[in-house]
Amino acid sequence: MLEQNDEIMEFTIDQLPEEQDIQDIVFNLMADPNLAAINYFNDFSEDSMDLSAISNDDNDETGMFCSESGQMMAISTHALHHHLEIDPKKATEILVSRAVRKMICFGAVPEAISSFLYHINIADPNGQFVAAGAKQGLENACNKYNIKLTDRKIRFDSFSGQGPVIPTIIISIMASVPDKDKLITHSFKKKGNNIFMIGKTYDDINSSEYLEFYHEITESALPVFDIDTEVILDSVMKRLVQSGMLSSASPVSKGGLFFSMLRAGMPSGLGFDITSDAEIRKDAFLFGEAMGRFIVAVDPKNVDDFVDLMSSLKVPFFALGHVTKGEIRIDDESFGFIDKMTSAN
Picture 1 (cartoon, rainbow, N blue to C red):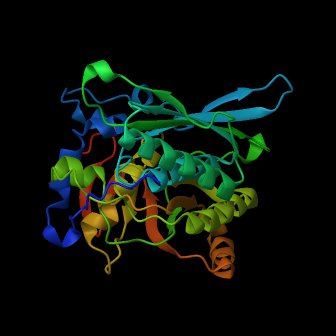
Picture 2 (cartoon, rainbow, N blue to C red):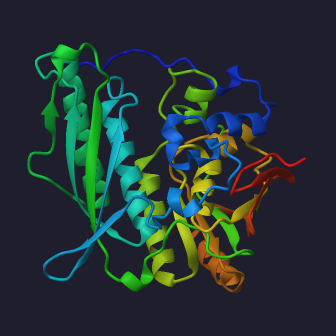
C-alpha cells in the first residue's frame, strides 16, 4: 500500500492583509506568463491594440471539427501540476472537472478523455504513488461525469537526464455537439446584459495565480473543490444551455473571476460593472480559483425566466452586475477600459 506524501500546506488566507490595492494586484497580474492569453495590456506602444489579433477565437481555445458521419465534435487539452505529488487523486479530479465545465458551458457533451503523465519515474515509490493516485482520480471523475476513459488510462513519460522536474498530467477531452444552433461562447454579446454567478464564493485563494505570482507564495493547498457539487452544477448548466436563455457562459478559471470576465469581454471589446460580495474578502472574490463556479450573461428580457428557473433548482446564484460598453468597474471604482486598461483619473 503506497503512502501519501505527508507534507502539510500551512498557508492560510489570514496570513495576508485583507485590505489591499486591487488595482495594483490587477496590473501586476497582467505580467503573469500564465495569464498570457490576456496579456495584451502589456503593449506599451502608443497605437491602440487590435483585439482581434489577440482574441479572435470565440470558442476560447476549444477546437471544432466534423466527423466523417457529419457529427460535430469539440476537443480541448488541459494540464495540471499542482499537488500531484501531494494529492494526485484530488488534483486529477480537479483537472477533469475543469475540462468538463468548459465543454458544458460551450454547449457540448463530454464523451471521452485520454491522459498523459509527464516526468514520472515509475520505478520510484513516489512516482508509483503519483501514478496510482492519478489513475484513481481519472477513473472516479470519469465515472462521476459518465465519460469514457481510453483503455490505457495513463501513458507515462520520464526525463531522468534533465534533473528534477515537477510531475504534470495532461488530458485531452472530446465532446459531441448535439445542436450547433445552441452553442454558447464565453464572450459578452451586448451592453446591458445582466451578469450572474452560479455557485458559491469562498474566502479561498489557494493555488491561485494571485497567490503564487503576486504574493510569491507557492506552497498552499488545492482550491475548494467537491466533485459531487460539480456534478450538480454541471447538470444545471446543461439545462440552462438547452433553455436558450444565456447570451454567454464560462467557468471561473485561471486568474479567478476578474480574469475570467476579462476573457469574456475581450473578443467584443465590452466591459463589466460588478459588485463584490461583502461577506467575502475582495481579493478572494476577484482572484480566488475555487471550483464550482460559472459566469453567465443574460439578456434583460430573459432575466425573470432565468431567476425563476434558478430559484426552482435551489442552486446558489447571485447577480454580479451588467455588461458595459467598455469600462470596467468594481464596487463603483473604475479600472479603466478593456481595450487598454488605463487607470481612470
